[in-house]
Image 1 (cartoon, rainbow, N blue to C red):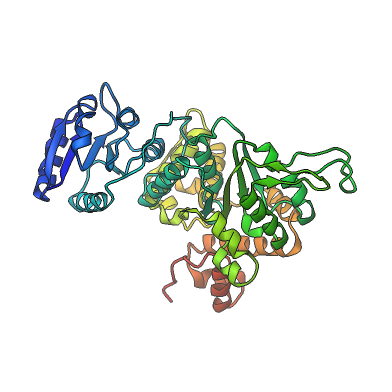
Image 2: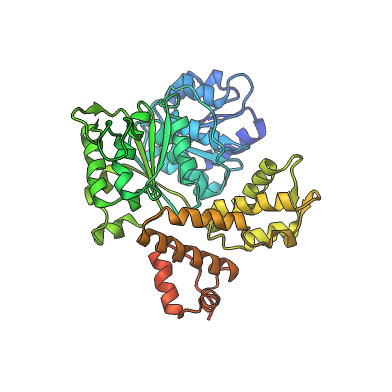
Length: 442
């Protein structure tokens, strides 16, 4: 019979959890304080650990106990930093109180199949402001904790505007490299002929205009993390050179004769379907395998319904002092939107509303707006930095997203707004990774 340790200072919750676990056929050991459980944990097969306790906290317990059997942390006050830090320190899972019987049954079965977990002993760094307690975001936070505990290459995938750079920064801040540089590079925004110099640097006179030597992003990120955003837009020639750096850990500047070691942790991101690009011959399969050691898939905002109002209120707090609040009708409208631009679109919407509304309450009517001239100019400037095919692709996706937003996700209406056949719309949605929008009724 497996022995389950429950460490929680809440007597009522601890007793209720004990009874549920005994009903499932397990033996239970109880502890009211973390410190008294330091010796008991080594005789338990699985431990349920509260994070907020007087005296020694759950995080402190994990750091001191260094458990070798699964620990499932519990808290009524869920936040992303708790999840990330607990997983980094070796916790098997992180659950929010109250815990349902089916969830309890599932997590115990999974934990007992994997009795050995990794140890952790790092000191926590600055917490990342990753807003969201939906199931999908909890999984993302757990993956961040796993990524932060090692030095492996990470590939972050998700639609534009889902927060891929924020996840990359969270991995960096919770890792052993946190005191070293975090350098971000947007591979889609750098002209093809300048990409090699941008990443690897160049020596003086390497090409026309190279009047001064340049270290390059790899050397700037020495000892830290290099974030390669939109790596799916990188051309095949540069992909081969990135692959070689990942294999050999050596960087050679353009025009230089010498090479240097590259002590850099790579985190890459893309909104594109890389397996599809591999099939089409536009992305190297060997590079994909090198990057995809740990994969983090960021869900689109439309699949994070429970997080939308939470995020909106967060952005309002950042945008106004004192912070404005949402009316019930405004919150309802936010939940009904398709959000093709994801978290970035929601952030822009809330910031604009906070500036436009003089009162303290934002109503549904305050959320109806079109992009300002400055926002349109900014988008145009971004497009003009791209090559022809990339710019056309981005513009096409933008048109699709806006039509879907205006049509509230209805494909037939979006096709009508764009003045194209519905079948062409379906083809373009699939091509741009927008095919997860719900089918229209007719």
